[in-house]
Length: 419
Image (cartoon, rainbow, N blue to C red; front, top):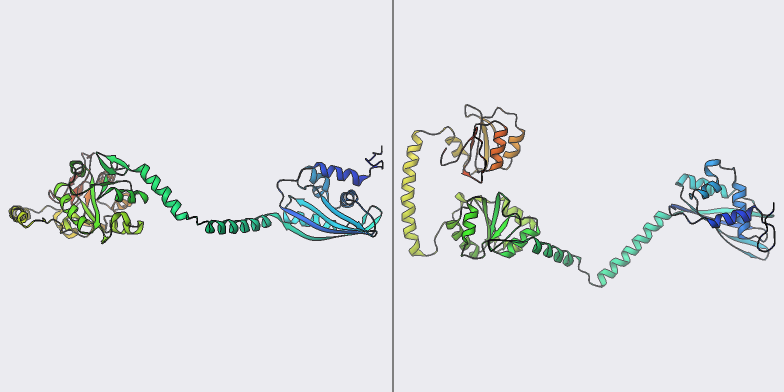
């Protein structure tokens, strides 16, 4: 049965195809757009061109690339035709959005060039290009990004300042209070801590993720620092100026300090970069190797010197007595002193492996050597004790005892004083 158009004329296949195409929404997965130019020897309308496209390509490319099926499954979008007629001749452009891959789209585009008639008129179709929509979008994104960047620069947006402000806000939220002193949030839970001069130093360390620092806030050092230092491995990290030296002197008199790290001369911890902080902490020295124990006033020096001489005499006597019956680890300790190295020994106290203190934990985990004991130039920590127990060692020998809470009964831990 023939259908009647709104203008009273009979509808043909082109009309039906045009209406069907216009019912289809544009596909949202468009990858390519086919651009083709059309010319016809006579007056033609959009519906005539759409009908010709569907009619003359039908069955040409097989079922998989049938235009009607592709449009129904939304793999081909609405066919757009822009055409004008002048002096008995028509010309225009055909646009076909495609969600097919590049090869299928190219085949479909080539099939358009087989169209040789539109209605009763001789026609010619030539594909101008297959546009990659994604490439076009990327170009638009790039141009828009450039424009936004120029606007940002013109408006003076300082991204670095914004980042610093956000980091500062985060650090302010993280900084805590330990018995009235500014501290990082991990000061209580961490086995090792950093003691610094002031609140600004704690904030700068928080900026770089170091959360186990506490500030002494001046030369009048709180008893809380003294108590905390007795159960933690302590590194004093002070400014490289006269003020830092004075605070360090007092700290060494009232607290149990294990290591000392100093900022570069004339620099403050609060102004140091991450690289500078990491370098200073990497180069920290055991407190025994630092010549910082001096007294400010001349009159205070004499009694301390006398006292230290007296202690020295006693120490020398004890040392002489000790040499008469050297422990089997003493020689190793003396050789390792100041080297920051460690040795794994067999039952005969012979060296089976030598490494650095930094790599000791890793070595204890991975070694397959027949080790019976470990001797090293460092502080005995809970981690070293636990690893030694896992390896069934009999002895752990270090310079100083750290914060060891759980002591296995099968393991004997010795330090320089008891070795």
